[in-house]
Amino acid sequence: MKTPASGTAAKPSQPTTRAQTPADTPSTTAAGTRGVPPNEGTAGAPAAFDVDEVLRRIEAAVQPFPKAALFELAQEGFDSAFEQLMACIVSIRTRDETTLVAARRLFALARTPAAVAALEVRALDEAIADSTYHEAKAWQMHAIARTVVEEHGGELPCDEAVLLGFRGVGPKCANLVLGIACGQPRIGVDIHVHRITNRWGYVHARTPELSLAVLQRELPRRWWVDINRLLVPFGKHVCTPALPRCSTCPVRDLCARVGVTKHR
Image (cartoon, rainbow, N blue to C red; front, side, top):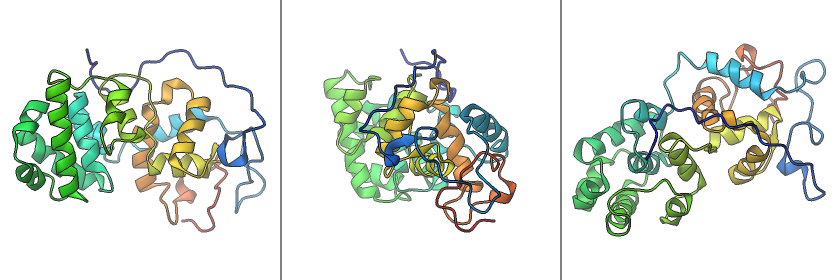
């Protein structure tokens, strides 16, 4: 049975951080394990990094901003595993503002696997036409809906292996679905989470997949679901890809500003 989507995972005890091994490299370690660079443009290195304090400050800072699309849709009642998966597929390479419009249009037509499977692919494509790669996504979503009906009794299970078994569904979407719709402690690492945690110096990883591995090892579980909820709006409005707003950032005293050469 799925739990209500609140955007906050259960709070199991924090896992013990494993000792660093010789296999660890600066590209896949968290802050405090190897050479975090100093805060560029400031006098000396930043204060010791406290991820709890950082995320608490960001929680307050993002209150005025629109929520990340999947969390917004869950709050509106589109909180089943299937609805969250459909919305996540729509969101790929698509702005949140567009994702929300397209997903709401889709859910006005169909919200269950059986209802989506009953649609013609053309109708599904028209519903999500504002999103990037909409035609390919329509075929993908229709195929997933049919599989859920035929192999899972019409209800998408909260099962990582099942989700990752669908063509085109990767760890980001699987973890967001399991975290938001199923109440499991999962980390949805999108480009914002990857960029910002590396910019802090908390993670040193070349790809989102490597960032996920570090965060699963280092980030307290109480933040696993919420880190995506917080860093998506933070990354869009404060810690932007180019010219981040460092002068007004609530965590500027704790951030190493890795890779930042210019800022506002």
